[in-house]
Image 1 (cartoon, rainbow, N blue to C red):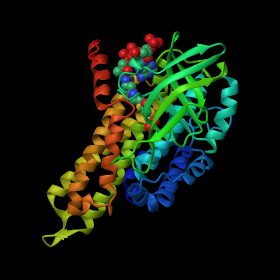
Image 2 (cartoon, rainbow, N blue to C red):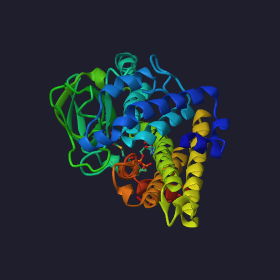
Image 3 (cartoon, rainbow, N blue to C red):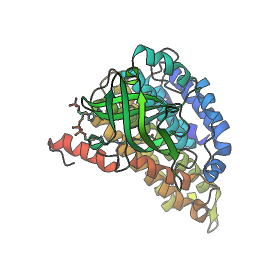
Length: 387
Ligand code: TGC
């Protein structure tokens, strides 16, 4: 297949272990056999195919990098490869795995009590329970330090007031990890979504991520027992350390969308004839394909390098910013170039390119915008914060 040819182009397979290849192949199969046949229609219909959640759980993809009971305990590269394959089908399904595993489950795994872990992680890993991660607020997502959602003590209880926006899966979720300002700094709370005062509404009118669900949440006097607070997280470093996990998955995932665009471009270049020969026989098209390949391979090698650093416990947030910024920027550039190779057909849903391009606009903005990651790098280089 074209994907295998691209794996070979830079000998990526030879840099991966057998177990990693097994995870990769399992995700590639799911993406090809289950997501690909329905995704254009689901995107058109704004349909999140809930039945896939249990299937993803059965394959071990949910919270797969966690060591907790019920989780697969896979390595960072294996997890990245799964993100890559799912996003080659659609960013919405990589986003689901990110929100469930890297954000909601990670928060409970890193900061939860033994009781919280036992109650939530095994069913979330099996895909029997859906989680979401509520950090961003309606006034903007880049500066979580300015959050206005509060949690105050009332006797032994906590009472949460506020609002969140752009929260993936919230309207379908069984549990939300909600971040709120307290007298003691920002704390996280495990909130069953059936708790009175919790309302989640899907945001309509999206022209991106249409096969996935992002929501507004209102927290109107949500009363929780003391045991709902995540005991291990105090301050913004809690949610940021979960964002690191999700941003890492995007480094791999966005390159999956890029690969899909490159595959259809090669296919088209070798089958479409103009001026009496395949367009792929022209130098202009070959240059486009070569530039796409170079950025794709660079992106993959960067993802693999960051994955190996993560496995060695040496991956820093600044390095993740390099990866997220590069992968999404280059994936978007590859998608745009692919569209030109496909000509007019490139704007139709006979090809996945415009869908990937539209999805990547969301990926570019969530989990830290391009601008925020640029400024993180500017601060790292100069020691001066520009935000
Ligand atoms: P500052 O407020 O000074 O620092 C607070 C504390 O956080 C620590 N920290 C990090 N820790 C781990 N990993 C990181 N990447 C961290 N970044 C900061 C920091 O060291 C400090 O720790 P402590 O112990 O001293 O309290 O924040 P800062 O000046 O370091 O960071 C500023 C900035 C702009 C980089 C940060 O605010 C930022 O990353 N903003 C972007 C936030 C973002 O990505 N929001 C999008 C969230 S996505 C979402 O909500 C939807 S979830 C996806 C879905 O549902 O679909």
